[in-house]
Amino acid sequence: MPDPDSRGRFGPYGGRFVPETLMSPLQDLEEAWTECRADPAFAKELDRYLKDYAGRPTPLYLAGNLSRRVGGRARVYLKREDLAHTGAHKINNTIGQALLARRMGKGRLIAETGAGQHGVATATVAALFGMRCAIYMGREDMRRQALNVYRMRLLGAEVVPVLAGSRTLKDAISEAMRDWVTTVRDTHNVRGSVLGAHPYPAMVRDFQSVIGREARRQILEAEGRLPDALVACVGGGSNSIGLFSAFLQDETVRMIGVEAGGAGIEPGKHAARFAGGSVGVLQGTRTFLLQDAGGNILPTASIAAGLDYAAVGPEHACLRDSGRAAYTHASDEEALRAFHVLAELEGIIPALESAHAVACVLRDGPAGGLGDLILLNLSGRGDKDVRQVAVREGTEVEGL
Ligand SMILES: *Cc1c(COP(=O)(O)O)cnc(C)c1O
Image (cartoon, rainbow, N blue to C red; front, top):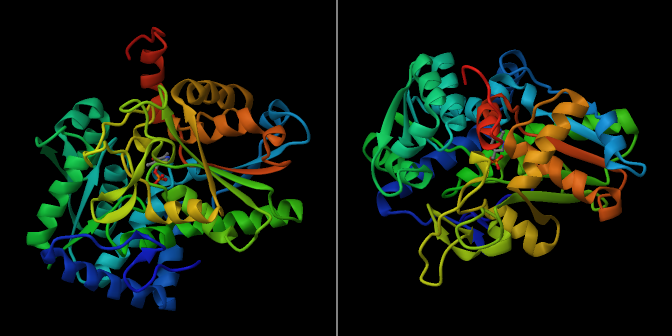
């Protein structure tokens, strides 16, 4: 995996655009991470928790019924991150960061969360390692995701309502930063995706790269060759970069990231940064953003809360410039259709985020240039989304 340069840049993207007070905590974190990633004892400890606690390796499953639906000679494999503990890939990263924090002698974790998935994954590892935990969450998001708020509290975390701004994820990120500035001696700030100031984008990628390492080995074992295409949904971009990272040198393997097309590519109606965005700086990093001509961050929208964010990870911007990866989007409607198709054909209810990747494979398939052998990252399970789907489709469910 190519690392960013010494200033944390992936080409013209990334970097460390933060106030002076955060420079030294980020440098300390970079140093600790550089040390740990070279330490076999750290790798061994991480592997043990990934295996015995998170349930890795996750299976690579040949989805026969889905393959027939896609048509042609398609063989579609699903990397089953939905089977990891807590139901998504996020646990890979929070276990890694918690172990790192413990190595640094820190006894408290803080995190921001939007839909609550990263908050739950952080609260989970805080319980596991006996660390104190505070999760910052916009008041509006808390209302929409009440069940995840309760989950975090069950796990022993304090959930702190954020009343500033739009009371959603970006305000929660700022609040967690403010906490960290004053508590950094004892506190680690657990970022949930490949976003933010250096070293977070590279560090979170490294923790998620286990997805790609396993998948590469598993597909070679099953098919005796590399896949024609990798397909993954892109919110901040951590599950996709985790998968892509193991195949970057394999030039025959196409990589496709799927962003949230929402209700259409018009300002405020989607979260497809590469379709409707431009370069700017947000929350510590230079990357593709959804902003207006004056540099104000635009509102975003997606049926999938985990894809609903104004910025994309800087390494993705670099991969897109070089042409090594390509980015497309799926609309809310396409994702909803794919959600039902996977449930009915394979008995797997996908997260609405992951349904965007399924939608891309259903729409494009071999005829659309994906080739015959397709590896789709199923980033999470859809239990969290069934209520939202029922409400949106006007399906009456007693007791819901
Ligand atoms: C959070 C989340 C995502 C989006 O985050 P990435 O960093 O882009 O992976 C995708 N799928 C699921 C299930 C999630 O919980």
